[in-house]
Image 1 (cartoon, rainbow, N blue to C red):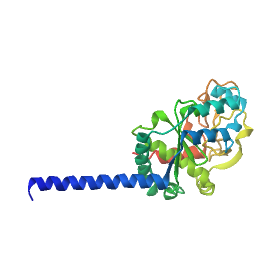
Image 2: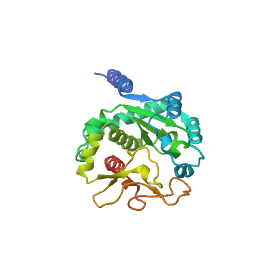
Image 3: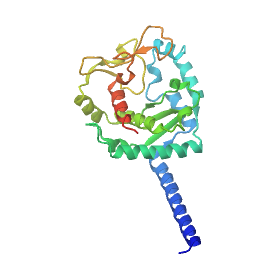
Image 4: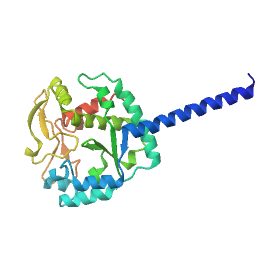
Length: 256
C-alpha cells in the first residue's frame, strides 16, 4: 500500500470516528438530557412548584439581600438564561463521562451508582450569580448551574455532586438505607430552627449523626450579612451540613 492510499485510509477512519461520536452525542442528548430554556426556567420560578421560595423566613431573606419573597422571585426570574450551543455540546460530553463513572462506581456501600447514572439529566442555567448567589444546586429533578462555570475543565465533579442530590430526592428509600448504614437518625424538622439557613439540596429534616451532632447550617446571628455568615455541625466544615451533602461530597471526591 503506497503512502497516498495510507493517508486516504486514515482520513476515512477519522471521518467515521467523528461521525459516530457526533451521532452518539446527539442520541444521548435526545434520550437522556434536557436543557431547560430561559422561558421554562422563568415559569418554574414563577410557579415555585416545590415551595422552596415560600420556605424563606425573614432571616434568610435578609441574608440573601431581599425584603420580600416576591422580590427574590423577581430577581431570580431576571437571572434565568438559555444555554448556548457550545455549552450544550461541552456539557453533554461531560455528562456522558459522569454517567460512565457512576455506572461502575462501587466504592461507597448502599450507594447505587448505576441507578444514579440512569437518572435523566435536566439542567437549568442562570447568568449573573443572583439566584442562589450562583451556587450549583438542585430542586425537584433539576440541576441549576451558574453560567460562569459551565465550561470549567473539572465541571464533571459538579455534575456528579448535583446528580447525587437528585438521587437523594428521587429515591428516599435508598437514601434512608445509606443514612441508616452511616448512623444518621431523624431528629427534628428544619423549620423549627429559626436561624437555619436554607439549602435546596436538603430534605427539610435535621438528623443527628453517630456522634450526636445535629446536621444543619445555621446563621450566626439574626442579622446575617450574607449566606456565608453561618456555621455547620463541625465549625466551618460545610461538607457535614446534612447527610445529603455528606454523600455528595464523598462521591465527587473520587473524581480524578
